[in-house]
Image (cartoon, rainbow, N blue to C red; front, side):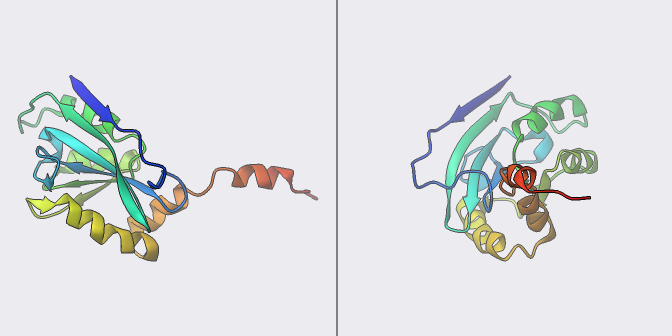
Length: 157
């Protein structure tokens, strides 16, 4: 069973779109990256942009063991819809392949990494877009109205 808690963001909060990434953190205490992906008790999900970040939602899962049972990965994958990355203390190779397949970059960090520090470090990375996964994620999240503008242009063959 998955439980989700989403908050209404304040008006000044970054919203997913151009220049803003949605990022999840595998966490039990919602303050530190302290979980293995496959048995994570939950995720804290944030929208992060060059100017700051805002908490988007918390997701909690039923307890799961690190037992190699991949059936439990499905609900964790579903919870990451719209996320560009998930920060974890560990992740198995099968889960890595599945995450990359849905466009989510797993980011392994030392156990107990404070989420606040990871968010602070991520902001300049988004501005620079030098890290390959960030550049790829930003490219995928460009303004969707660009297709409408292209359609309005005159085309000659």
